[in-house]
Length: 356
Image (cartoon, rainbow, N blue to C red):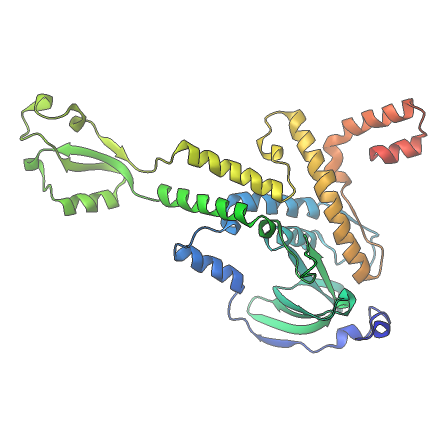
């Protein structure tokens, strides 16, 4: 596509492309299936299945969904909270998010793409996307110009500019550590749990096979095992005192392992642009400071990159306003405003500088 043809208009010939529609074979991408297979084959855990990454993805999704989109007109009506939430979640989980721009009887819509490939030269405006969008039981694939998609990314490498790279791809070792710790702790906690109470040989079957079956079937109950005493009536003097006390068996992970899991989870949060203190703070003041850092050093700049992509593709100057998220910092901004105006700055400049 020539540059002249590309810039001739957003609402013209872009929407006349043909779409291939077929029955949907599976709701999972190849990457997700590979993760499940690796888990089933014991090849290690995956960070995508951990609570640490979900906490980060959920926080980003909710933060972006809270944005007020301006200007409010027919072209920005498609940028719904649901769209912004999905963008935030996918930026964390896969490093990029793609939506197809479609025009229909209900106006502009942004349809999420489940899989896509990018083709073209070193000029992003000339890229062509092969995009597949999924429905409940059908899917459709289309070849689309760059102007017909909204492609948001977390980060890029100069050697692969067409691919968005997520925080866990950049910090792969941290992700692998977190996933493996979750997997091992899950395996340990998922084993049999119960108590063993030794009894004399004539008090029951006493076979090793039966004991193994009892241990495997234990669900918090008591399992009988043969004692070292010769009979019932000899008491504690003929057998170790421990024989007369139920011995619990079950998950008992080392404290160091549990602590390492916590530290790895906080490292995941840092890689995702979230101050770890936001999850560990015990007081209101440090929690507000952590939230302020997340808002100003994370949500605001990422929001600007998303707004820039929406502006380029929707043909109107889109702005994402996160004022509501800053409500908890109103007292601090008011103090900053007072200090600035007290130092001689005019009120308009002081209000802008303080974010009021």
